Length: 284
Image (cartoon, helix red, strand yellow):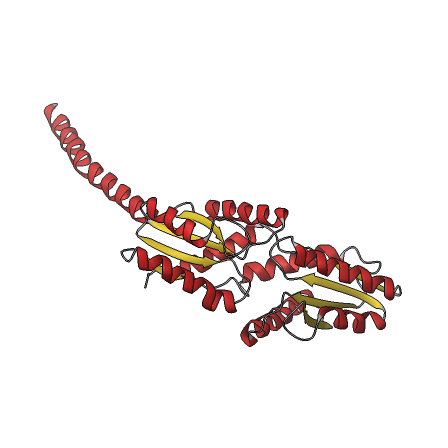
């Protein structure tokens, strides 16, 4: 009777030893497969030093969001590394698939033509690498949440934050009608979420109505005006919007105009990009 438990114990140990290495190999192989996916994070680029710094800070946050993938940031204009540099780096790291993630608010010329053209050139030199383009972050709910949070924070600074407030959403502007429409839909979502029915949408360039004319029309009525510059980072464009707001405020002192911040390298932006990357699970 004393031998039986010993035999049973040896069998159990043998069974565990037989299963454990297979499980370990399977887990290791899965990790290797995931690590073979690279992300080409493509920013627009800016000459502004702070804006460039914020882009790379966001890249770090994206790495935290999806640590299983190789994140390689690059810039379309003004700064390096370029798309070609980043593609080559991912290939040298041994990835077998690249997900091209445009860090753009809406799909316009850069997302529809400029970036795809450059990626095709890269792919022609490394045809064994599979790749797929992800969608711009657009109206992902993490972005809506971030915008609403920034506006709530700015709204609290008004003299009478509970009184009527006019919301002005300002986009960079694009000749692409779909990008313009996306910006207007975002304005509707945000105004609904914040309970601000008096809303307007304006653009800094390339689309109508323009920022200055729209802001002047609102300021002529007096009251409180909450302005959101829908931009990713600091830079000349944000500074130009700041200047316009200051100028109009001086022209119409009876109005109270407050400008919220740009989106910045926020974790919610990283979450939106990660969601777009995960949407494209199968390369083309």
